Length: 439
Ligand code: DLL
Image 1: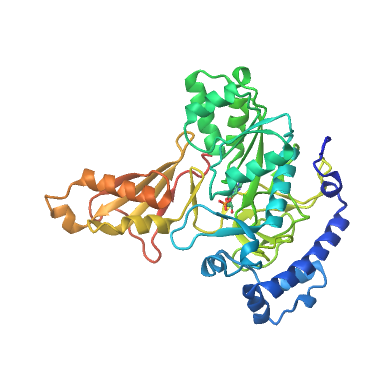
Image 2 (image 1 turned 90 degrees about the vertical axis):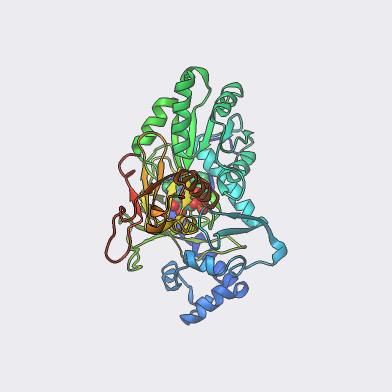
């Protein structure tokens, strides 16, 4: 049990050269594991004439082809797995997407690594066994709730597994149970702060809250300032993805100058998203991770689509692991609405079920206050517009219900006249995102 500044001082402050040696040692084993146990990786290696023995240095990593999200979808559910079926002990999935979901299939050793990294991450922010941690990330297939749960268990903290919803009740619990750490999406934290103000709860006086761990969606310094000021806490950014383990891939340290990537388990690169060229530290690009310890569903050079910058300079906190800047956005079209991943294709799928509608639609996102607004504008077909029997209110309700079923979140549907939505030449523009700069 850790009792100082670090959860695992030896690992967290390991000299950079030693981290590199460890990474190379693990990379060689991991490549061999993939080649011998996953037909997906074997084919990938064979397609470029690469053998595990060709990986002799960390620079050789660049010889390995990228793994992309569509590989996971195409090989759903277990085509990329490198473990025996009975070795998989838990499965999670990222939110969003119609078609095949992106799943994470974890062995016991993957689960142990995840729990360890979450414990290390909580500890890095200052979380200790004396803390009461309120976990308001969703529990279930999403890795947020259970990821924090496992980590907090290892730290030995008292857990309040609140999950999502019932905001007022959550505030009451936070008050009555002396909650000291809040873990949720940044947008939910802002919403909680707003509701507290409406309910006359003054966090600085009525709560024992001292820090928060926020992630799963991009958030800006402005949001951080608001959360910190309104709740009287220190906010920490936490990053991760289902494909690698869930939250706990990287964590902000008390210096608040980036998120340390746990390099004993992951090699991080940044690449130009258009050309795939590997970038140098300090250059902004797409994050690519190689998981060094995962045995269930290994990830070699996995393209995340997340845009960030790597910083390899020394950190004043003493940790030697490289830092990534907060993720500013994604290079693909996935939308994160109120913390939930939504693809425009899901909306298309939902609205195209209605014969009364034309094929045009537009998703309008905004953030006038704390929460995202999510409007879907759809066009009536000429025929339905002319038909006096068309009941627009009933249609609107049905479409809203359908969108909720498909995405899991509520949208406001606006039905407009035929021809009213803008048309473009070439690719249709389906999303009008007015949230930029309003976070
Ligand atoms: O969001 C894991 C997570 C849970 C991280 C709780 C942090 C806290 P997925 O559902 O697979 O996993 O979504 C992963 O969410 O590729 C990013 O685009 C985005 N994301 C995650 N953390 C951050 C963050 C979880 N701190 C996708 N800042 C990732 C910005 C984030 N975006």
